[in-house]
Each structure stands twice: as C-alpha cells, then as structure tokens.
Length: 211
Image 1 (cartoon, helix red, strand yellow):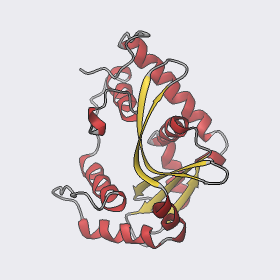
Image 2 (tube, rainbow, N blue to C red):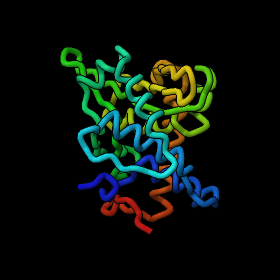
Image 3 (cartoon, one colour):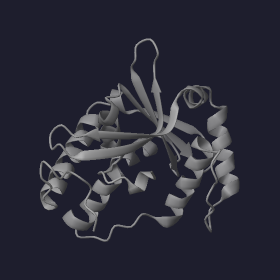
C-alpha cells in the first residue's frame, strides 16, 4: 500500500493540523523546494523506481548533490547497509494514537542492536551554524523526536546538503544536542494530544482524520 494511503497520523499531518486548525492558516508547502526534495530523495534512496519530473526543478544540480552524498564515506556506509525509505507503524503510548513514519535511512548495528536514523535535508544555508539554526524553525526537532520514538532509535543524524557552492555536507547529531529532541518531543506530544481531542478520536477509533 502507498504510504500516503495508510490511515495513520504522520508528522506531516501534525504540521497541517498546526497550521490550519491551531494557527488558522492555509497549509501549503513551498512547491519548488518540495519538488526539489522529492526528486533528490528519490534519486538518492530509490533510484530503481521511476523518477517523477517536475517543471522548474534543476535536475543537473540534484544529480550533483546525489553524487556528493554517495562519495562521502560516512553516508556511503549507511546507504549501503541501512534500510532506505522504510515504513514504520507505531502507537503513541500517551494517546494510543496510531502513527506512521517513513525514514530516509534506518541502520541497526548487528552487535549492539542500537538503531540510527539518517535524514537528508537540502539547504541554502551557507554555513553550519545557519543550517543548525534552521532546524527548529522548520520544526525538524519535532520530526526528529517523532521518528526517533517510532523505532526507539539511539541516534538521529541530519545530513544537510548544500544547494549552493561549495555543495558541502553538514552533520548534526540530534541526540547529542542538549534539549533538541526533548523540545521536539514536547512539541509533537502536545500536537498529537490536541489532534486526538479535536477529531474526537476514541480508544476504539484511533486513526488519521480524513477531511
């Protein structure tokens, strides 16, 4: 079944809920950036599948960035040995809400059984500090906590991929940043609780609301 057809609550659903219900704003992702990210992730993580094309997307640049990631020793190890675009279905223990997540890369150490998640973000940030500063602004701390809890991961690493010269990679290990995951967890837990209450989901009826 297609990920988007699975009737569970995703982090994106929480973003839409926050925008439309709590803030009273129309939820709309920036189309150009979203399409760029979709093609980048498809070429990097699922190159064996047909790649959808979008008008106005710089495919030459995307191919350059994909190759940059593939040439990186750290990324190459996880891409070669991890599960890519893995679907996770889980239940939030506080609300009992049925949730879902799609992880860019999930890696489990065969000896310690510790789990690591890699999440790739293309960025216009010119330096590491700007990239890190943008993570909370885009609610990526909430995403990191939501994904971490979905599989009880020990490590969550953002890989920022510059869309501008010199096309560097930024590494941010969320689980080592003081308060980052904790704050993100508070954000998603609060939203999930309001989501369940708003749509009046009961103990026997915990599913994604379909408008």
